[in-house]
View 1 (cartoon, rainbow, N blue to C red):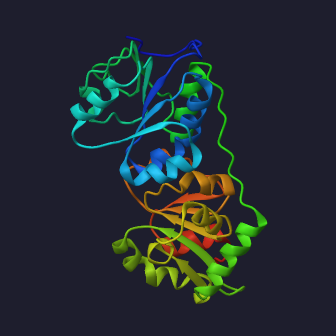
View 2: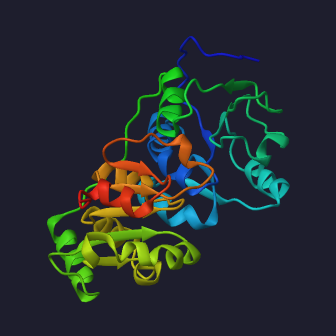
Length: 283
């Protein structure tokens, strides 16, 4: 088994792949370009993707013409479904750290995992040289000479206009900061007093209770016009990066794996001060 990748090799394009998508929202979101690249590089269709139920609609918006198998606790039943289909040539397990899938025996000859350890039932293990999620998946595909081609993510003027109308309907005003929130109800209740102190109280909060009825395209349009995206563990992290929306990551076990820059900051000690500095309203 390879312990390090200091070489590159080219995979045959005429293969059918099975991808086990990450089972956490942040990882899943930031792996979208890599999964899209695999779907477009390998020519033998359809490809199979094992996806968490809550991620499927988001996934299908970006990656079409693939077979989606809903993840579940019954891994053996999923394997039976896979083995009944046409031959799978290559398996990519995008979970990091590895999920319970490493305990399952897959039939493809080439089985690729991302791990710091040596998980069972994989014959190639990619040991990341960086803990940055975005770079990790990019490095994995580059190792195998698979070009990175992100899915197009464009919001039209008409779609943005509708998003503005939606925000105004919910009380947004020109002088307000527009906050797109994808956080738990508990976090929202705890942080609501903090949000309401931003920009001297001139804020419009687009939390899940407001946006839950919107379709994916409408949510993306609303995200694209927002001044600040507050995320706990959200599938909208990658689109926010593409749109260059200021992003504040609430503390969780995965956020240390996401690179900070002028558009993205992680929660540390003082959310009000940190968010104010990020959006430029700090005194």
